[in-house]
Length: 102
Image (cartoon, rainbow, N blue to C red; front, top):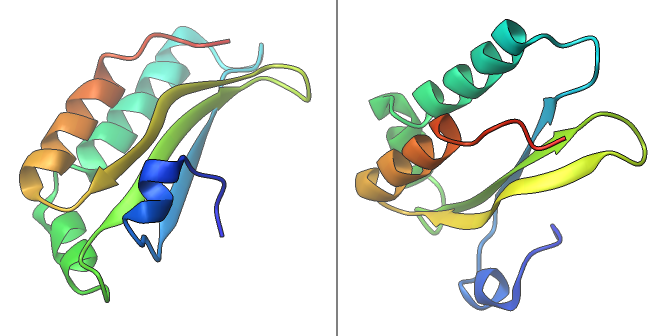
């Protein structure tokens, strides 16, 4: 089971996706923007919601962590339930607007 808040646990989520984005010194601003844009775009695609809808509970929990080593991690988007296209769009908007966390 993924590490999640009590709200996520109560929602009986079967699938959790923790997205880890590399923010180490070897990643420049252009590469960082590419990672975040790609993640945001993935949640805007209809195929993503179709895949979620095919799951047993038709929802997932997802979070985003920026990391740059063993002591450099920050949860920049906490666990979020994606059950509708609107949830996915809101998550994508949040990811796209998230500045570099570490």
